[in-house]
Amino acid sequence: MTTNLSGRRVQAARNDGVILSAARDVFLEDPKAPIAAVAERAGVGISALYRRYKSKEDLLRTLCHDGLRTFIAEAERAAEEEDGWVALVRFLGGVVEADVHSLTVHLAGTFTSTPEMIADAVRAGTLAGDLVARAHGDGTLRPDVVVADVTLVLEACAAIRVPDRDRTVELRRRQLALILDGMRRGDGDALPGPPPDAAELNWRWAQSRQPAQRDTTE
Amino acid sequence: MTTNLSGRRVQAARNDGVILSAARDVFLEDPKAPIAAVAERAGVGISALYRRYKSKEDLLRTLCHDGLRTFIAEAERAAEEEDGWVALVRFLGGVVEADVHSLTVHLAGTFTSTPEMIADAVRAGTLAGDLVARAHGDGTLRPDVVVADVTLVLEACAAIRVPDRDRTVELRRRQLALILDGMRRGDGDALPGPPPDAAELNWRWAQSRQPAQRDTTE
DNA sequence: CCAAGACTGGAACGGATCGTTCCGGTCTGC
DNA sequence: GCAGACCGGAACGATCCGTTCCAGTCTTGG
Image 1: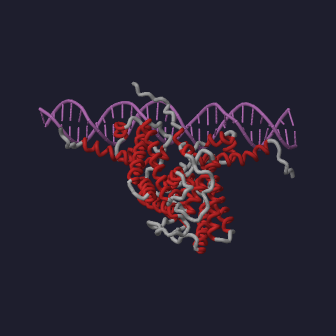
Image 2: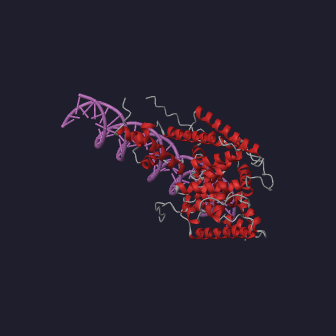
Image 3: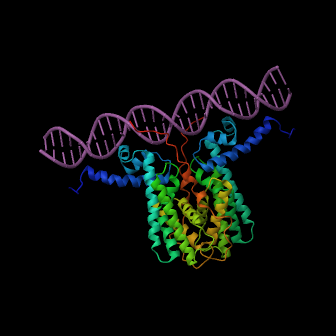
């Protein structure tokens, strides 16, 4: 048996990953992006996509399910931590780092989910609940915070976005640190990363949508 | 001169407000929503829209500019507060309450902005900067927080959304309180409002996009 | 009661977009 | 050198959406 794949096989195998990664980037940027945009970003033809996924919905579903699995993996990894509070912090940091939450949030509702996905979603909820419970047990987490609050924290962090991916993660880490430490002067460390600059937050205003010059002079 | 408008005049005047309010709701929900959706939500015909606004872009621009002005008004109102920290808190609360930030953020880039808007945007930035500076002067705001961080806080809060408008504001207030007070046990008050429930956060998953039954059996 | 006109509802149009299919071409293994 | 796996991208058909247009309704003034 030849484990040595060559030629087209190699290209095909590499495309698997490239396409998935490109799809992640594109749909993270715009959940309604056309499928052609994914192909272009991946540097492949549209056929390469349709060879792998039955439809756009199929691709979206796969992408979202992958994100869900990552979420679960992060939760399980964080749960290994002994200290309950540290585990929760590591969990949130991991999810933010992986940029998983914004993907699921943005893509939710654009496809019909499979039973496995629903099961995984339930499992994810359970794991998160456990982490919160442990943090409560430690007495470090303020008592009036519930699991859903944590979900909202993730949602809030996922909302901050700048064109550059790495910088986005940096800024989210900073925001998460703020949420964790609190804005009131405390005994926490200094906020990580360079502070955001006004210019890098105004990027949304840049693209001034050319209105195609529809003049109404007549 | 008859200040007493009646009949159609009344309807027209009322429609002015209804349309603007409907547009706010609709575009807050989906920035790419068709203009017909606004008319439907307002309970008016499409003509009623085009009588008032030259184009969709015009409506969007007006909406966004209104939001910007509200932002400025909130900042000015908060600035009247004597205590710097209290002023900042009131400012953030006001902006979150008015649901202004998410509107500007979502709509940015969908129209070409007028010079007045840009000027207002600059002024808004200045006002926010002043508030942060004052809070720093009081020594209550942790020193490593900059103005842009505050912007990100607003962006983060704007991201949390549930179908019900009032509940959304409640949850945002809660999240804002969390950010302000911090998650570590402190001397702050209890989080306001009932805690979010898992069910009310899963609404996005509800709409399982009917795929129009395109069967590939052949 | 009538006529003019302000204002509206919503159908119709034309253009753009996008998911999907299909065909011709390239490379690999035999 | 040929069969088949795999790919790029044009072409198609459907849908959507912004805008225009016209017929209908209500009000006012006489």
